Image 1 (cartoon, rainbow, N blue to C red):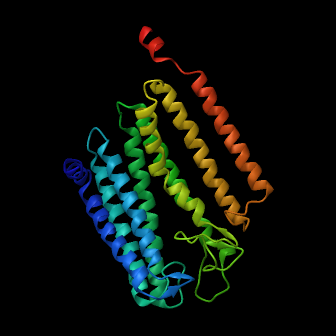
Image 2: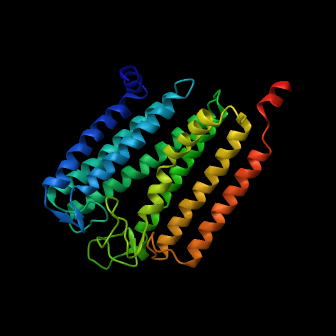
Image 3: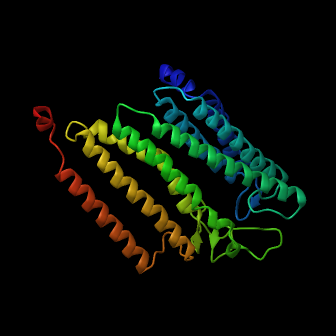
Length: 309
């Protein structure tokens, strides 16, 4: 265990230092949720720092691990990782700073200071997005011995970019709340801060654009985990080409699911109260994914035949 942690600490030092800081912040925020009685937009005021710090722990660790898979160290990718750390720090400093001030960080332009902080967050997210793209290009251009792992990393990076993009509607003019100084919202059809699911806070009375954003971002973990499971538990029965094809099917389904959840939110529909159209779309996605996976497995090359060839 100690050896594994020591090795992980050297994947990408700035990212792993940032991950450690976010892990500490997650603990502090968890204490704040219990100890601080303040409520902001219908949720404990420390809930947002808690969610963001946990998310950055997952994001930073996964990104550092992916960079460690690159056979030849890339100075461009290393610098891009450091830029991501810097931009993430900007975002977290604003979020925590606004909590300490007792006000919101996102969409808040009620005062010149609040507007400047919100614009700084927006600029940092844009730079982070570009750095993420750079890392994706570098990683995909590097040859790797395990094609299935390479596809999982590539799909995870690409789908996480989609997860970032589906957050854009939160800032569009039609998301204006009508409240002076508030420039966007994550809920659709209802005000932000209404009834929501435990912990995540996703609206239970209207659409919530954070759902597709969350699902898309965490493709960064989901696809590599799937690749590991395919390799560890069914690798002896499936050749590499079959595993790659299954990952492509899973990646396509994951991308469609992200868009489907975003579309559901844009129609003002709560996640747990889908209408007939949403249910039909989910059923079609499940059927298409199962059919495609079945075809891939049915056409697989058996290991013994591959060895004979």
